[in-house]
Length: 271
Image 1: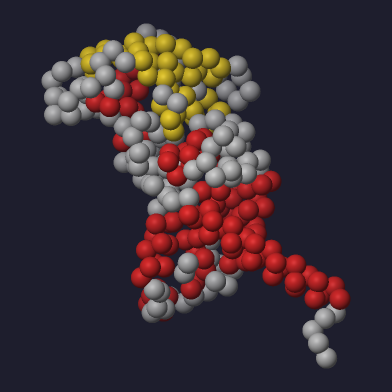
Image 2 (image 1 turned 135 degrees about the vertical axis):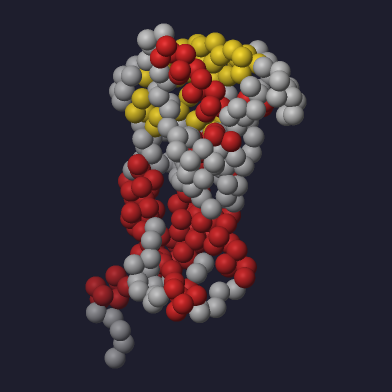
């Protein structure tokens, strides 16, 4: 392992990178040699160096997604040596540095794989399924007044902290990539809980959880079997406790909806 403070000792690695021309096209791993790398460069910077070399040779560069490169946006979703986002916990792919690998290491890089995350090209997966789940109910549409009015609503400190923990989810999809069932329940649990814990989210609480879970199921995500690989791979350390919280909300909302339907159909209401 290269020491973190040894910035003068350059390293070389062999990359096994998944190359795929487009959706539905056959893909394969292709090997590349990356030499003279500063151990303090990030893995994405290393891919930049490799792509510069490929372009100089007139070859097609490796397609990979990136944006903030600060572990905020979740765009840089890569499986590195079989682990979503790489060998370390609580960080995204862009926060993985070459000092994490030994000189001469063979590093395998591939896209997040799941039926709802089809490969667009090379290392880029289409994760718009998460956008559809979010659009189904991951918002508050009920008017709560201006900011001063909303901020005047007392929220217990514990609930506020839990809501912030849930809201830390960046929607990268590592939970899906890590799960053997391609379950999105950690993502949905976090997005449901960040609102259900706050007063502003109560008016649409039932509609929200029913709509988001229904959309998740319709998009082909699998069920949770409590392996907790999802929380282990999450770059923001989102707790799998939010899955249990979502399940309780979903059960309660389902029972209330069934009661309302039965009361409506029978014309109940007393009298």
